[in-house]
Image 1 (cartoon, chains in turn blue, cyan):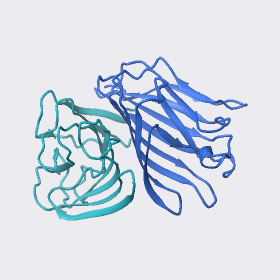
Image 2 (cartoon, each protein chain N blue to C red; image 1 turned 90 degrees about the vertical axis):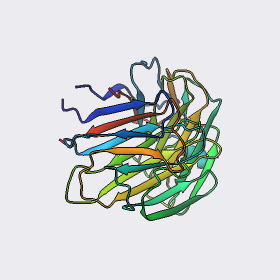
Image 3 (cartoon, each protein chain N blue to C red; image 1 turned 45 degrees about the horizontal axis):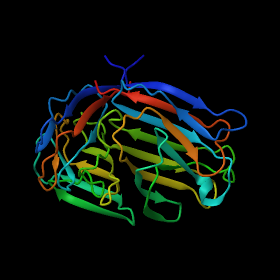
Image 4 (cartoon, rainbow over the protein chains, first blue to last red; image 1 turned 60 degrees about the horizontal axis):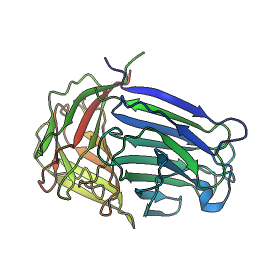
Length: 169
Length: 165
């Protein structure tokens, strides 16, 4: 019986923080990838402090997204030219980390690559964010690395990310 | 170590097809998860039938965003439940997830949670709950397009069984 979900690697940010979290040399032996991120940022730079980016193979080109979001008081839908997700910024409730799940199917295929994001940034205050997002990378390359970064500041200590490989047989 | 997720079957279309069916689904799991990346030459939406039921025994509640606004809508007593809405099917690969809860019980109606997204310029993001008003155990799932367009070659569908313990 196959082991369907296998943890490929886990990164936990140490004291002093980290500007990026990277998974490199991803094996091409799985069908899909699942990235689970629990993250807090060191910035309180307004909206930028809430946002992180995922870069497949380090790329910032040919990325698009469509999101459905809620802020605690409003809902909306938006587009962008990146693969964005939410983190909890430094001025939100202490010891609170945003959670994100990113699913990338058929990451070794010769088609363009798609991704599904579920992401939240909780805060015991007036504003927090939740999003559902669809991402497209118009690139046919096999995804061999994933880089997580932030729009402002660093990942705070104890932020963690685990990359899983999923086999369909 | 217990195997929680088990792949039941995978279909990758080598030629265009009107539908994909998973049949003779074992009742030995707790829940089902269908992961698909459907493709279509014409813009369309997915719909689904359980156990070949073509009656108006389905309903949906849809939360959706099209890139500029968010909205919600619903269907009642339909034979063709929307399993995607703005997260439509076209030439852009888009991941679709269908969580089918407690599918093998013979006491309650069956509920499916859908997460669908398509990042093309005409696409969007959906969260959909679908109800099938039947107490039958689900033993087959048919996936096709709402307007009848073919699913294109390269479309992928994998059905996983999930065991609670």
